[in-house]
Image (cartoon, rainbow, N blue to C red; front, side):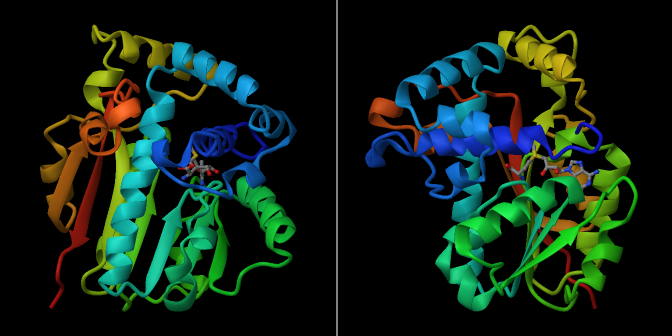
Length: 294
Ligand SMILES: C[S@@+](CC[C@H](N)C(=O)[O-])C[C@H]1O[C@@H](n2cnc3c(N)ncnc32)[C@H](O)[C@@H]1O
């Protein structure tokens, strides 16, 4: 993130979800009807015009191959998991590094049953709050905004001060964030989740594969992704070996791990006319339940 500015990658993600909505309904992998409303002028103009959107997606595919299709698949997978958790009775949802995540506003079941905490850097959250007020006229009563620079303050301090109840069954969503933060910050966050959430709580997050960041990697997608990170001045900071995530989480107090590669989502979500879309094999998604405590 550039000093004093909201996250540009958060806006880029919202733009990709907005672009997905321009596809015919039966081709959309995820449905985010509010993504467009969170965009600034530049992206806002692009997603109003199908031709400009097609050119932008073509360009995105050249510099970050597979990014657009992997992102919508990731959002859809996490949406599906969230809906399952709502059915299983979660009482709180914590969205870490929320950016322009619109789940609190577009998933109706949350409004009645679940308190949502959106945790984000104050610079990004300030812009989000302005946009939410503009879209809905006021801030929704079921959402609590927790502005926290996680480089300066611990997650626990901010959440507990904001009314988070550590005895309640909670889902933590951490989408599109871990690659940008230090391994120590990943550990601190996981420790908070493991030690401060009610029985049956869980976390879902995506992460980069170590092999994708490895300079020796032969994959052309991986080379282009590394170049893009370097150009943006946002070096990837956290990654895991593809087969190590289970052990990594088990050592940190989680159980019932289920991990999948992004590429494997292609079979589930990209059928028919979508069969040729490009999902990368540079990362994965994992969900895990918090260990029982006596
Ligand atoms: C790539 S965006 C992901 C946004 C959203 N989760 C999504 O998937 O579209 C990364 C998010 O992490 C947040 N972030 C980055 N550094 C942070 C920090 N030091 N403290 C808190 N949040 C931070 C940014 O504000 C941004 O919203």
